[in-house]
Image (tube, rainbow, N blue to C red; front, side):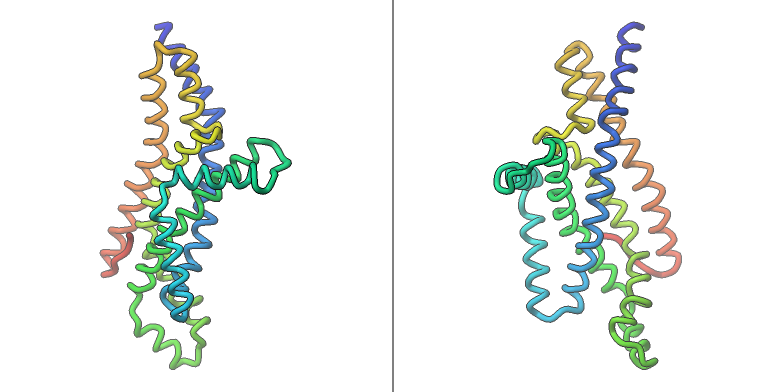
Length: 230
């Protein structure tokens, strides 16, 4: 009874100390990755050959480098090369956002590119026949449909990113795993229980989104005769 009570108290501490950081990293990384990913997708689909090469090269580089390596590169870059003058937490937090966001952008760009390509090309031709420019047609007709088509794939990317935040503990960012391991070293008898409940936290923040949001959107798209996702 005493052990379970102690484990519950540790769980509360892990959530109050580490969960806000993990969620902030997830939200900011997905937001930045979304903006960069949309730009990369548009470059791949509508850009000249030079921009297509740049977009393709970006995707290959950031999808090919392990996230842990990117974290160390950005952390060292901010702390050493740019002589970061702020707090250590801010430097490592910023480095984590850069690594997570730029890597996520490489995957999100593929999601959005596939969604854009799924929109009937005849819609662009119809828009041009109505006197709309390519920019207007893309912004008002193509992108709204592509964003809806990308929801199933994007929910999967959300699950990947929130789980990837566990790696930032390697550079000292105090998120869920960081605090979980710290308490595990302090209370070794509770190690298995602490790691288990930490894993459950990740599960609770990923499964409902991918299960109900992603799958419901996929079913809705299929009922409309559309396909989407990564």
